[in-house]
Image (tube, rainbow, N blue to C red; front, side, top):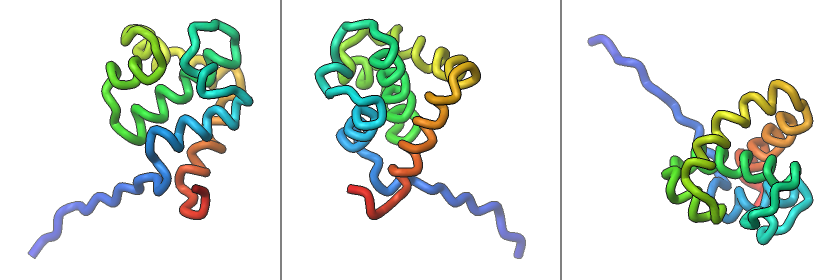
Length: 111
């Protein structure tokens, strides 16, 4: 009997909205209030982009749910998804920050 493909999906152990929010805030040196604020400083915008993309990727959150969490319009979350790829190609620091956060999400000891 022929066996089909077996897919192994590695879900981050520590992936929940609050943990992702905490890790993003620590990585970018901001507060949770700063993440939800309307301020357009570069580090806050970068943190929002990373948070939006990580929650979409690891939690499969809807765009509207992420927009509510970030206190922004849903179209901005769509824009964040497109902009993060461009930002990572230009700014290595953001790419490294995303990698560090994802590594912590996969680490079962980190709580």
